[in-house]
Length: 120
Image 1 (cartoon, rainbow, N blue to C red):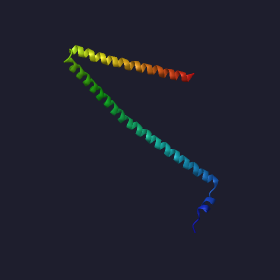
Image 2: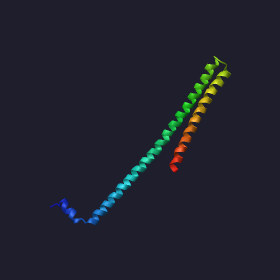
Image 3: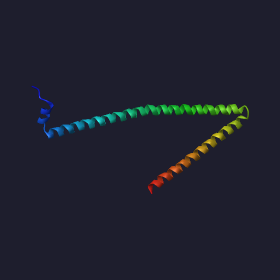
């Protein structure tokens, strides 16, 4: 005759049940830690490739911008002198750079204010 589940449970002690529960908990914790380690390794390996793609995109974007600037200088050089077109394009780029730098400085000052107000 086979024993029923109730008979088997009645033969086990509470200590055995707690030990089994602890073992199951350890195994679950180890599996969870292993899963998160593998996820972190996957993310790190993927980040390398993603970073390389962004660097390549930035390089090609930079060269595209340089081609546009050279094209502007050559195109404007036909209407005004080449020196004049160079000065005009350089001046516009310098103004844009100055405006971006001022905006960045303003955002940095605002960030410093927010951070310093949080410390009080």
